[in-house]
Image 1: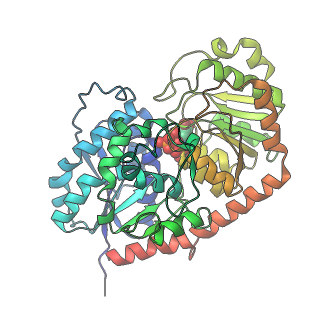
Image 2 (image 1 turned 90 degrees about the horizontal axis):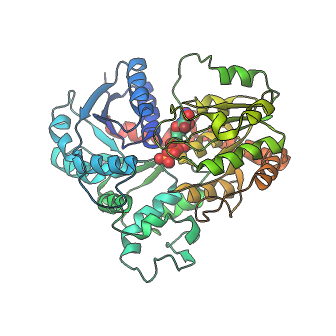
Image 3 (image 1 turned 90 degrees about the vertical axis):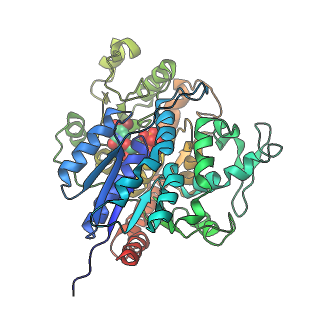
Length: 456
Ligand code: BUP
C-alpha cells in the first residue's frame, strides 16, 4: 500500500544565520520524500537572503513557496537601529497573518517547523488548525538553554545585572557574565523582548530540533531532556550538523586559488554575514595575518548588510599591504561559499566570529577554529566549541572586552592555531563524530527519520 508523504511548512526568521539551516533542512526533508512549503517574508534584509531563496527554489522545484507581508515597526526604541533586529521583530509580530495561507495549504499540512522567533503566532495557528508544530533552533543547545531561562532571569534583576560574575541555570555549568550579550540584560531591548515573547509557547511544541549533535553538546542536551533546565520542555532533538545542499560547480577565483595551496596551509577568515568590525580592527587583523607568515583567505566586510560595498581595500589597508601579501594571501569582498572553503583540503584553520552555522560547519569539516566572538550568542558558542576540542579562544578579545586587538598578538595566535598538531587531531576527531551523527543510522539521522515517521 502507498503511505502518503507528510507535508511540512518551514518558517525561518531573518538573516542568513537563520535562513541557511532551514534551507538545508528543507533539502533534507525532500530527500526523505516529504512535501515541503517554504514560508518567507516578502522583503528580506540582505541580498544574500533573497539570492539564496531564489537559487534554492530554482534548484528544488518541488518546494512550494509562500510569502507574507510583514507589518513595519514604528518604534523609538534605541535598539531599533539594527536592520536584522527590526526584521526579527516584524516577522514575529506578523506571523499571525500566515493563518489563512497555512490553513488552505494543499495537500493539508502535517506539521509546521518554525524558528523560535515566530513561535508565538505559530503556536496559535497550530492549536487552531490542529497541526503539530516543532521548533528548529539555529543556535547552540547551550544558548538555547539561556534563552529559555531569560524570562526567569529578567524577572529577578538582583541576580541578573552587569555587576554579577556569572549566571546560574539549573543543570548547567554557569555562564560567565562576559558571555552573556549585554542587550539581554535589558528586557526592553528589541531582541530580548522578541525572545521573551516567544519562549512562553515552547512547551506547546511537539519537539525542539537543534542544529547540533549529541556528541558535541552531550551534557547540555541531557540536562535539557531530563527536566533540569526547565521542567515542562518537549523533547530536545539534536538533528545536526544539517548539511549543505549540493550547489552548482563553482569556479570562483578563491576556490581556484585554494587548489594551488599546500594541504592545510591556509587560514580562512570570516566574521559572518551580519557583523562588521571597526576599520581600525580590520587593519590590525590584516597586519596580524601578514605578520603570522601564514597563507590566508580573508573575507573582508565593512558594512552590516551585504558586502558588495565599494569602500576600497587599498584605502583601508594600504597599497603596500596588498602588494606584500600578493602570493600568500587572498582578500575577497562579497559572498563566498564558506562550506566549500571549509571542505577544501588546503584549509587548515578558521578565524571565526562563531555564528552557530559557522561553528557547525567547521565541526563537520574538522577545521580548528580561532574563536573571535563579537556579539549575541557567539561567545557562548565559542565556549561550546572550545570545550569540545574544536578550537581556541583568547578571552580578552572581542565580545565583552571592547578592546582593539593589536596585530602582534593576532599574528602570534594565528601561528598557535595553525601549528598545534594536537589541536588539529582533536578537531579531526570532532569532524568524525559530526559525520557519524548525520550518516545513515547516526543519532541525528535517526532523530529526523523518527519525526518524519510520526508525521506519516
Ligand atoms: Br559572510 C558568509 N558565505 O560569505 P552564521 C556566510 N556564509 O557561505 P551570521 C557563506 O552563511 P548569526 C559568506 O557558511 C553560514 O552558513 C556561512 O551563519 C554562510 O553567522 C552562514 O555563521 C552564516 O551563523 O548569523 O551570518 O553572523 O549571527 O545570526 O548566526
